[in-house]
Amino acid sequence: MKLLCILPSSILWAVQTLAMPADPEGIESFAPVPDANALFKRAPQHCGTFKFKCKSSAGACNNACYYINCVNKGRADFTYGTSAVDNRVHSGCWTTNKEATLCRTKPFVQRFWDRQDDDVAPKPLSCDEFPMNAFRQGPYQQGTIRNSLRCINAKENSSGGSQFLQFRDAKGDWAKGGKLAGSRDCEGKMKDGDTFKVDWIIDGDDGISNADQDKRVPYCKPNPKCDNDGHQFHMSKLQVNDKGVGNLSNPYNYENDNHYALTGKSDIKEYRATIERKEDWASIDVFEVAGSKRIDKGTASGAFGDGKQLKVELEKLSHILRVYGSGGIGTKVTFIYAKSDADTLSDLSFSDGDIGWTTDDKSQKGRWCVSEQWGGKDGDSRMEIIQCSFPGLA
Ligand SMILES: *[C@@H]1O[C@H](CO)[C@@H](O)[C@H](O)[C@H]1NC(C)=O
Ligand SMILES: *[C@@H]1O[C@H](CO)[C@@H](O)[C@H](O)[C@H]1NC(C)=O
Image (cartoon, rainbow, N blue to C red; front, side, top):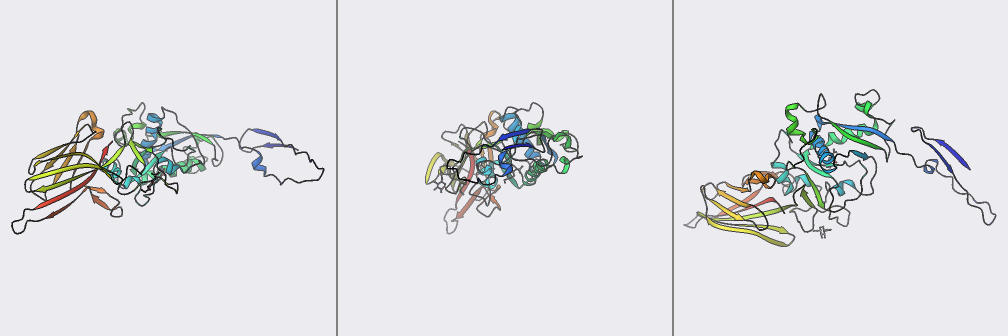
């Protein structure tokens, strides 16, 4: 039997000969009717160039540009289609902590939420991954950057996703006659295995005003500086549980949970500080919690109060944590870690009153620190314990 077939949307001619097996016993046997589509492996098409319209998805653009320009050395070719693994789990964006997601879980929320200006990344933020979920990708491999992650404005995140779906389905600006149709090279909806390039629009109606490009889409400019702006990170270890989902617990447990690294730097860990205050004196303990283990990082004690500071040298970390008092018990305490021009990525400063996004109170805004006070009656001295958690680099 000879079949000749012209695939409708390509110039490919496929000719295949199906040799029917010899019938050894001379008995008529019938093979099941073959599925005509299954006989031919459809040749993938190249569908031209998907262009992000950065106006409505600056954060997603910037993340894609960082991956392409800074991680992937300029290579912008991708394949659309199913992957053997769940891409969101293998990118690190989806974890067991679905309620709050990565970008709303301590210590990541503290690092990525508080340090971004509202005019660049209006809250709430959600985890964006590039390559995108809809692209064909292999499983996560330790030691590689599979996806660039960035906590971006949630609306920009979904706009980036729906822009790609329009390109895939030849809709909107990508439909016949649409303003971007010229860069789409294949007919009809894209199919599993089709390839395309990724590009972005930062100028004009679909772009970002010139004045804002450096702030909002720096990695999309020609020949960008690839220094991490402090918001590009990636999963550095995947710890899947028995349901195939990456572990992320609350509180964060570096021992059992996924690891995430600030790209070009090191893993982000959760540190805690406990401060005990009594009159004009304080003692400070800084430690890391890894499962049931408490790993001490440093301690200091001494006079504390208005304008006084305590310095904690942190083991294995290159900088000193400075803790400033502003008055008596119950007044503001400020933490400053690093603050050098040479190493701004490690910088961190917060006050015990700072508000972050926590998971403890159902994704409500929460404090970096909690404090408890007692005493002060019948001549007892007043005491205070302040407990803070903060992100540190490994
Ligand atoms: C948006 O968020 C989801 C997960 O929360 C992620 O999988 C997806 O890749 C993100 N980005 C885009 C552009 O859709
Ligand atoms: C995921 O977390 C659970 C609970 O903490 C732990 O029992 C399990 O070993 C973790 N999985 C991995 C692969 O570390």
